[in-house]
Each structure stands twice: as structure tokens, then as C-alpha cells.
Image 1 (cartoon, rainbow, N blue to C red):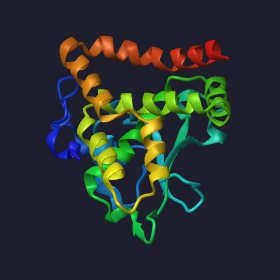
Image 2 (tube, rainbow, N blue to C red):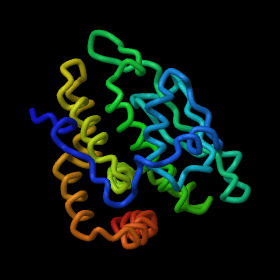
Image 3 (cartoon, one colour):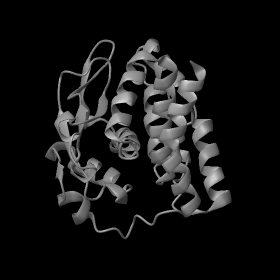
Image 4 (cartoon, rainbow, N blue to C red):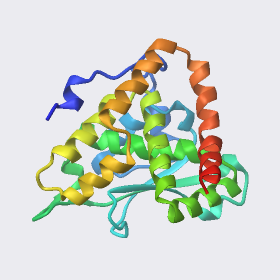
Amino acid sequence: MVRFGVEFAPYMGIHTYRNMIIKDTETIGKEIPNVIRNEIITALAHYPELKSTHIRFKFTRSLNGSIMAARPQISTLLGAQKNRKYDILMSPVFKLKNSIEPLHQVDPNVLIGWIGHELGHIMDYEQRSTFGIARFGLLYWLSKTYIRKAERVADTFAVHRGMASYILATKDFILSHSGLSQKYKDKITRLYLSPDDIVQVVEEMQQSNNREGILVEEAEISTNLDHQEQESR
């Protein structure tokens, strides 16, 4: 199997991340477990739009069949959008066929990719009204087709922010890991962008090299996602 995370270099033409001041994303409105602090801060550095967004990264054993999940804090949806708060819930362990592995011991690039994907969901939520988030939750629960589209939107947000190599490293880790069930691998293949899809997104970005156009496209993503779901019903 091709080692996507090693052979693929991230596209950095839209944002310049290397010179960002990490302190900003580290301290404003974030609750970060120390055990994976570096990985979270690295992922956050790719999302300058979320610099002041309240996000709590929280370990929990309540996730069912998922490693991570991004969710709005319901009590904050009734006020102004700028006061919204989000949780990124994380399983403390990675369950394999015959063993478990602490999440913080997974390769850092893989963790960064996972976190970057969840931050992509928060970018999606930030495009939506309170009603839109409620509708998203309902459709996500009811429609497998909608789940697939929503997960690919989150991947796309991450790739647009120069995280292609991390997203590919995460997929490579999952698809090549002998300790993961084939059922879980099939789920990842079915729902998320494939490595070829990610390379195509990056190539399109390189050809356009148009940051404003990409931001306009992203502003339309959530609306288009819901309209496509309506038309399919």
C-alpha cells in the first residue's frame, strides 16, 4: 500500500501557517488536554478563522463506534453566533481487534489529521444558523447519504487549509492497520474522501490559486449540501 502520508507534501499556497503566532490559537477560548496539546495546536494553526472560537477538546468514553466527534454545545445555540461553543469529543483509547491503544500514543501526524477533520466540521457549523445546525443533526441521523456528504465536506475544509498530508496520513493509518476490522475500514472508504479525491482537490487549488474564490466556495458548501439532500428526497 502506498504510504500517502509520507509521499504527499501539503499544499501551502493559500495560507502561510509557518509564521503564525501559536499563542493566539493556544489561549483564546480553548480547553486542551495536555497529553495531546501539541497535536491540537498544530491542527488549530491551520484554522485561523477559529482563532477566537470557543472549543473544548474533551476525552470521553461515551462515543459509540467513533474516535472523535465535533458537536456544538446546545445551550450556546440560542444566543449570538459569536458566543457559540463547541466540543470535540475524543475516545481515550483506540480499540483494535485484540487490544486497545491509548489515543495519545497514535502517530502525531495521524492525530493531527483526525483533529483537523473535526475542526472542518466546526467550520461547517459556523456557516449555519441555529436552525441550520438543528437540521444538520436531524439529516445526519436520518440519512446515510447525508452523512457521506457531511464527512466529505469536513475533509474538504481541512484540505483547503493545507492539511492534505495529515488527512492522508490518517486514512493510510486506518486502511493499512492490521488491527482494525474490515467493517470499520469499509466505513471509512465509503464515507470519507479517498486519497485520489484529496489529490484532486489539491490540484484544483493549485490551478486556481485563488483564496477568495475558495472562501466563496466554502460559504456555499453548507447551503449546497442541504439543497442536494432536499432534491434527493
